[in-house]
Image (tube, rainbow, N blue to C red; front, side):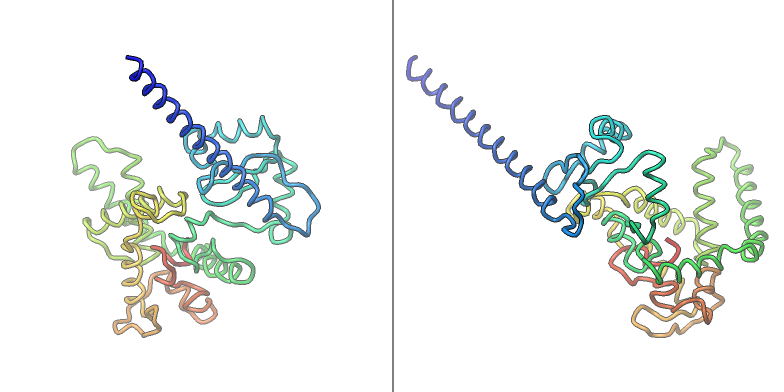
Length: 302
């Protein structure tokens, strides 16, 4: 009886010691994580960093953000003020709110601040997208897109858009069952964009497959930049969108990513055709670069 009681006490003591050590290690890791970001601050500035928390190593406060949603920002704002630091989606972040603060940020683009997307977006979309460009490359690619969405270009799209809409409405009427307007409109928008802007000729099965892949891309665009099983990056790594875009570029007569001209040039889509015109930007990097990055969709459309 007595030895058994001692053994229970020893087990409880060992468990308590293990928990205490684990707690101390976690606390030490959190402090080292915070110190790491404090030491990486801009030495040229004497201004202090805003108040806030960098969260846990690697994860930062991403898990809190996912669980709390909009409440995350409001709770931090109440605690730290309209400007606070945090760590989300693998990157350190300064959260700014308030009309005057936001105005300063917006008017200071390319002078005080520079737009930057989460690392996961750069990994998935590649390095030759509009969102990944800064300065002159960004202006050049935006100029290409301005031609695609100009008034004259949009007027040329109208007849094809009307035809697609008529066909879709007829199919809804012929189905003889209730139509989920949101899902149907979303599918229609995707098909129209794929057909008119990118020139992808897809049957129903291909369109459904590509739409699911695109939805996965959108759902996991802002995720932890960790390529591990069951992660957001791993879900959208198979390059299905890239394959379709390569085929579209080949049909449009654009060179393959290795520089080899297409053997079967065809009438290019509005987006690819605009990028391929003289003065419309370089075919690779300046206009549309299909398959140029490690991600799924590397092109000026994004």
